[in-house]
Image (cartoon, rainbow, N blue to C red; front, side, top):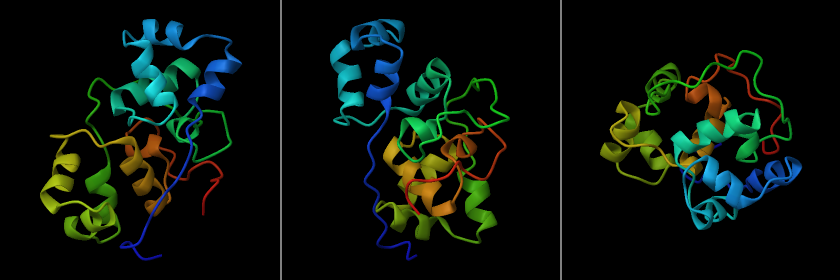
Length: 162
């Protein structure tokens, strides 16, 4: 697969998870101290879900970020899921990029952004949006949870997209 023409269109599972718990958007919004409208925009994919909130939502719903973002139908967390890290900017982006012998410019092109913008994701200076995490997880064939150090399980659950 070329890294230069890579697109991902997925639907998140927040609404499904919320309905299975039989709770309202307002209840979740209150639990996370955000507005109901803001939560609704995440659920309806109007706004990208911040990484720190994705981590909290995965813990709240006892599932993986991959499931929340619609990469898998497997609701279960990864077997060795870890406690939520204190820093939400910690990620394995540099490690996995170097393992694949790629440079920052080639990954930046995959994400259709500048090299310096991508570099800021690797260093944690900027928080990577959910849709870019999704692209990278699919491209590297790892879970988003793995990219964010929430698990050491490299292999993702069975993917909806190949």
